[in-house]
Image (cartoon, rainbow, N blue to C red; front, side):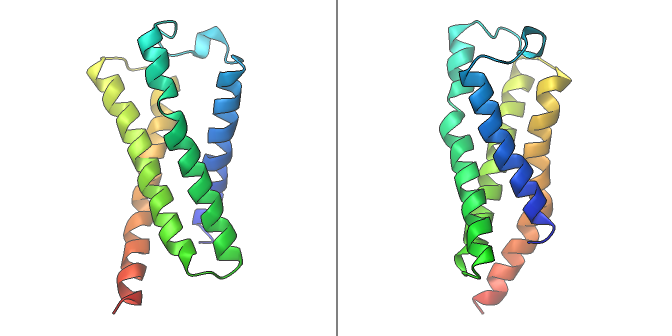
Length: 132
């Protein structure tokens, strides 16, 4: 958890900041994704809100449980990482289908997709050892 903690903090805080900034419409126009004013794309973007907030909730809960030495931290961490991967993968798949290659949006989503892959196998291995 020592290595995972900064990733959880950065990711979970960033989601809350991003959605707050989005709700307040504070993102400068040059950083908006293409077709931002298209109602369908706007709805697509906002469809990530529940998923991203669930990621933050499970990440923060995992950190809280770990600090209190509760066994559930492990399951919460795996759930948060799997949801994080899913969020990033879904966004990247969408941008690929649209043939839209803007690094401003690709890099954060590649981060969401890739960083969990370094932690999930280790946590799953720990889980399987706990059940034997």
